[in-house]
Image 1 (cartoon, helix red, strand yellow):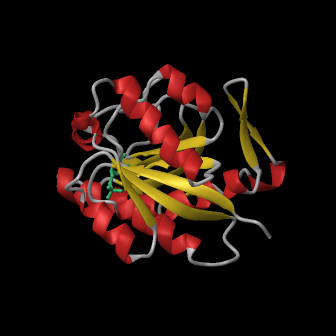
Image 2 (spheres, rainbow, N blue to C red):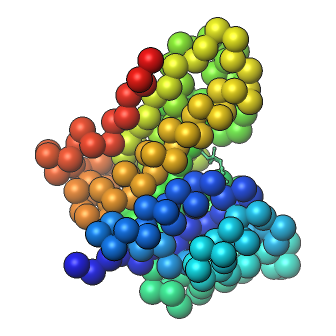
Image 3 (cartoon, rainbow, N blue to C red):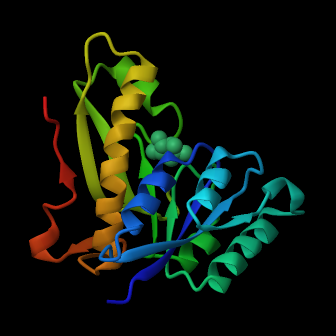
Amino acid sequence: MSRVPTAVLVSGRGSNLKALLEASRDPSYPAEITLAISNEPEAPAIDMAAEAGCEVALVPHRDQPSHCQFETLLQTHILESACQLVCLAGFMRVLSPAFVGLWAGRMLNIHPSLLPSFPGLDSHRRALEAGVRLSGCSVHFVTEELDGGPIIGQAAVPVAPDDDEASLAARVLAAEHRLYPVCLALVAEGKVRMEEGRIVWDAVASGDALLNPSA
Ligand code: GRF
């Protein structure tokens, strides 16, 4: 079985990258994380990925004269590694419509809320303020709309009455680490794809990317 070479773009801690690297250690996993790119030179994700034996590229956006040149460098690294899929995992730069268009249907993102609720920053704070009883995370195809692309999978977690941002974030993060590898596998296997801005499912697989709360 040939595995789909995949790049992961990060800016910080890298716990989702770690979850994807761990999944990809299994030779039967349909994607292989062959490249990690960070735009932040100090990101803890870099050392973690290098120690895991993953090729790492540093592309500091501040060193580039324009966003366009930053994205050109990203693209060069991704293509040089022959990656066919791109996963955003805590990547804190907004990508241009041109770049997003190059990767339409081949770029995924994870967001720590049940989209379309609470896109953008401070999702956990806004979920707590809204008083929702369930929160969670979503993996979606990346489109021009921030956190707005077609949803591949979601995992729900309960919100406890005494939750604060940190406790809710930790519960959601544990769900993220389960959900992202499942969703990447479905895309790599061709069981779900994006066509004309909509999700198309292999009927058998559509339940695989729903993770429900245990409590
Ligand atoms: C995660 O909560 C992810 O959903 C969001 O940014 C955070 C990144 O965390 N997009 P990590 O770097 O993967 O630990």
